[in-house]
Image (cartoon, each protein chain N blue to C red):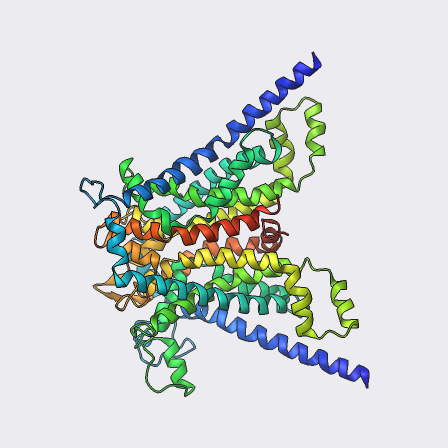
Amino acid sequence: MRKKNKLLVNQNEKTLGQLLVLPLFLLVFGLMGYPFINTIYISLTNKRVGYDSSFIGFKNYIRLFQDPTYWMVLKNTFVYMILAVGVKLVIGMILALTLNEDFKGRAIVRMLLLIPWALPGMVAAMTWKWMYNDTFGIINSILKNIGLIEVSIPWLSSKHLTLYSVIIVNIWRGIPFFIFSLLGGLQTIDGQLYEAAKIDGANMIRRFWSITVPSILPVISITTMLSSIWTFNDFENIWLITGGGPLNSSSVVATYTYQIAFQYNEMAQAVSVAVSIMPILIVMILFASKRIGKED
Amino acid sequence: MHSTTIKRRKQYKNILIYAIVVISLFFTLFPIYWMIKSSLTPDDLMYTPRPSLFPERITFKHYQSLFTETSFMRYFFNSVYVASITTLLSMVISILGSYSMTRLRFRGRIFIMRSIILSYLLPVAVLFIPMYILMSKIGLSDNKNSLLIVYLTFTVPYSCYMLISYFRAIPKSLEEAALIDGCTHLQTLIRIILPIASPGIAVVATFAFTLSWNEYLYALVLTTSPSQQTVTIGISTFQFSDQYIWGLIMSSSVISSIPAVTLYLLAQRYLISGLASGGVKQ
């Protein structure tokens, strides 16, 4: 009797459990899974907006891989990701270490350093676009006033510079995430480790590499991985500041995809760009999710 | 002798700390200062090759024309509408789901948990075209309500991801006692877990709101007419042929930053522990 009762309770628990995750299930598999799989199918058709489509096999991919613009965009995306994430990691680490020290005004500094992360990306992009402005921009004006340059720097019109100009904006907005994530890790390190190392005569740099880095390595790698995924797929920053130009010099995968889909109306071709970067993304996502899953 | 070197070393360290703080604050805050300053600068002082660093004359003209001559209010209310309803929906879905995944035992639990982490990482840049096609198919093209559905795809995985770690931190013994006393599972959720987790839930809701408020790419492809657009899209339309109207853009940027930044600053106390416990824990 008692046993039967318990079985019944377990059955209830099961049903309730499944019922409660049902919306999640529908969301993840219906709303994300289906379009995601559909993407792969569309990339094998000749779909354009407002027309019927038919299956054309790998033609979109062949066309894509023969297009030098595609390879340039891919290269830009990697430069954008590696440079931006690298700088964010180094500066974020320096600032996290600084904020982990005791000093007057630490709480307020911590709060102020967070602001760029909270701003809408669109606001960050438009503000920097205004500051970079060739004729009226404050950046050129300051540089001229302190005598660093005589002629305005064409931040957004030189094809050698634009990619770096947008990288700076991505760094500006992304540093807080690194600071706070790394700071969270630093605060879990046992202070006694440092005391022991000090007695052993290890200097600051030595202590950093032999205690700090190994202790927060999981935090460092998950933070870097998350930021890499986001930076690799960044859209609005580049789209609003340069539109990918001039001559695609600052075009990245997301802006290129958008352009093909909504300016040339070639949905299928655009989708093939997105699918072509999937292997890279899947590797990054699996690596990151393995790290996140570790706490289970 | 020894104590003076220690003292001096400490002094150097302090100088280094303050130098880093000053430089980083300047780099962080200057663009924000410049946005606010530009929003208050009259046009004749704004469009000069050598703009002055400090405000010479202040005008509220840009703000005035923002509210009287543009559709800014419409964009703003659309954003409030989309972000609030999205937050509400995603909190209900994620609280129920996270409770189920941390407290109830059933088959497929781990599988769902893993899929949520994966979907949290799946970028918008990959999903936006199929999502656009899907929304046109179900008749929601150029409709702000499509954003209510689509935004759940990133707010829910994020919220679950955070809530799961909050719920896990609550000891099970409390509920077990209640269950023995005859409470149902849902009653324990409402009477025991929700009150304990409420600060955490508030923080997660804050970030869900901010994520929706700040979103750009989906809003760009899924809405085209001003009556449906949100602030992030609306602001970038303040152009006269191909000339940007910077006074309007900067003043609307200031206003549309206020909700997200305020919420963030209120919640930032919890951010450090939140980020650390939400997955980046060893």
